[in-house]
Amino acid sequence: IIERTCEIARQVSADYEGKDLWLICVLKGGVTFLVDLMRQITIPHSVDFMATASYGASTESSGEVRILKDLDDPIEGRHILIVEDIIDSGRTIDYVTRILRERKPASLRICTLLNKADRREVDVPIDYIGFDIPNEFVVGYGMDFDQLYRNLPFIGVLKSEIYGM
Image (tube, rainbow, N blue to C red; front, side, top):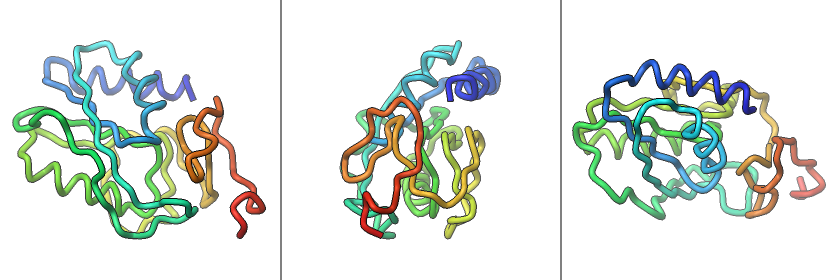
């Protein structure tokens, strides 16, 4: 994970050299990846956070996305890189990007640690992908099931007997 995060950080640093880069982390799952990524980015950048809800105590997105916490600062004219833990159906990131585009950033791109392309319901362009993964429910490295397992230092597949499927 760290090796791939460093590779992405090098690319982000090169792509945004001389630009007003803002990393927007989608909480809570994306925070571990964000922290490791921002430590490796070699150019000045700012950070802000959004929190959304679409899973709850389920292993599948409900399809209904809500904003629980909005950005603290305006993003107009800034170069925005959304940092996500995982992109699954694409509904959450599509919702977030539509909201952020209305705020007129100079650019808006997406970075995700994990990509479940086979689950995609909404086509979203992803600019930086850590790993493509199969359709398994994963936890660890910031990702949870019912608020548990975020603290694991690795990413693992949650056994179905844990979530009762």
